[in-house]
Image 1 (tube, rainbow, N blue to C red):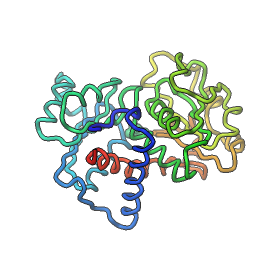
Image 2: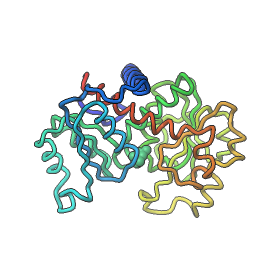
Image 3: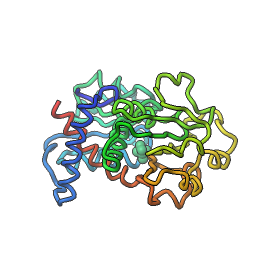
Length: 302
Ligand code: CP
């Protein structure tokens, strides 16, 4: 396993191997070991052809903590703006000695294409509406920390599944680990070939869906990927599919809420509940750092 492109490459054994590395790094970091040398002498290049806050900064910081040299490449300031192709951009990065290429692209499949062409380890940091495997791992580890298991949990994914690479990776990984995963979304955002995703149940009514779930993951409405409207107004979406205090009151006593970020406050989650006592959103962000450290180490060990 040279690259991490899709959660399809991961089985339960690999996920728990990465989890052990994650726990070790997190523990050591919390005990003051904030400078390590596992990646000393390695270079990490981060070409991001789409915007990012969490993924890019955590992959970059993870590399720095492990001792790597890290370089950010943003499409808007690179020679992509002059018309250089993806192939030539990546071959150029390989030629200047990249051990890891952490890549985000708007085109589904772009990291997979690149990985075939070069010797560097390629990590998919999100490709179109296809996959976001490091997010699925950090979501898994956040749930494991909170609930102690994934197997048998009732997990609900709410919202824009149609355009969400996070949700596609999440549902595949949670299913592999034995969770029962359900979807709640407006009819217009439920994919046509639903059988591919192996959902336990599919709802259009959030009040019915939310009651017996252990974990509820709200998805960002991805207006930038919607080429036609999927609901009348954001206000209507929020009334039908947003988290408000009434819906918090319907949750099981020990249920938790998650969101991959960035949150559209007042749309997916009412503003005052974003970092409320049910929310694991900042735990997800923090765990993103240690998950990405673990991914580098895991790929080097393969
Ligand atoms: N969850 C996520 O991918 O966030 P960013 O777009 O900020 O990286």
